[in-house]
Length: 569
Image: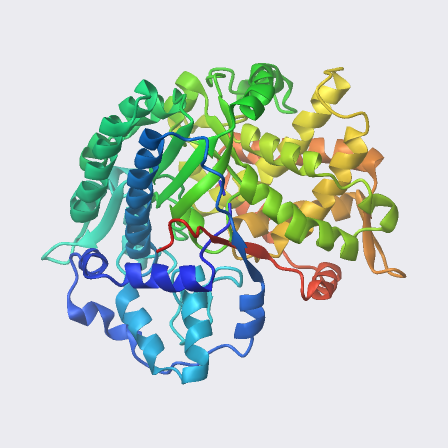
């Protein structure tokens, strides 16, 4: 998964104030002693590129028209936004060890640096730059690979123990800490974050009592219970059945933040309002998923026909976001839940954040294409193709290997590929998103514009440049570097030295995309950790030609920095 973050200048400062509240400090210091944060001392250098890095994020008003909502729906939104802000608090505690101490050190900076440093600290939810391989942009503290999910002083033997499923330390909804004897133990989120989750559960119950929508009420009550018992299955199933103008996605979901193992789920929230007409227009696509699964370019024994195909699609406007989704680069769409049991029973829901997507297309993708794509293909760039690529990217997360068998034991791709899973899965979804469109066109499905192959190819090319700017230390940026280098190697992408622009050859691109889908899916199907590591090492690099091209993009934002004027106060 992934929409596009943080606040504008005033919004960022408000968020920082909220994150440094006494309640957050209590959660951030759970099971710790003051000595645990002694490492936050030392020198406080600030990158000379701070102003340029700040300029990469353009503050963007994402407030939406809510005049069509009645008083009850607006009251529900108030409660859901309040709960989303708690998810933000919890994510701060998950992402950044000793967040409050690190934030306090910003006051030591020269006065002319403080405003920019605070804003960038808020964008990154800490002192490590998410676009630049998590290097510190302030201070010299090394990035905690496992965020705050694990003790910072893990030995190699302890890492091996965490990686052993028999140890019980790999649960999605647990923090790993030391007991009084110094031994590693798993502490459930419901216990570790009891204060915040109890407050969030209370708000969800209050919203449930206010709503007139039965499906929303059922989900909110079930998700409130899950916050207190760490069992999210029932509420995930109910979330799939939501049929409400006001919707919310809230809880621990993605595992990108755990860079050590990719085991631990991060708290996040999307508060949205649905466009039923647009959602209905796309509903027919879900019926194609079983056929597309059967068409995957891998042996039948590796296909996954048992995954559910219910797969509802929602086109929404984002009213508010918090937590994992708001850190660094913003999400434009997501595909949840991640629980394979739910996916096998019902599939997964695809949610497209229309107002965020439109903002990125206009402010980033179009000017980027004009700078880097040959003029004769810039005209093929369309908002509809950007939308379709995003949609089918999310649809593709529900296709291909999920539950697999390795050496006679049943397991999941996520557990076998560990820290490499997110990068490979994002590359798969991007490539397969194009492959699905091309397969449907080849089969004669009448879903798309007449020039879809040409338009899709040009828009995809521009999208690679957009996403690789996120940084190749991040899963989405790595995934796009993989695709760029793979297609450059195959001859589908060409660099024109004379004009310093790129083009894409559609006749080569279409079959090359199929080859990439096959190679990635086979790595997933057999749970090949070493093969995946080698694949990423080969292709997730920044070649000189791409680095030179990206240098031409000065002045074009890398991402939007969301401002929700109505709620950021």
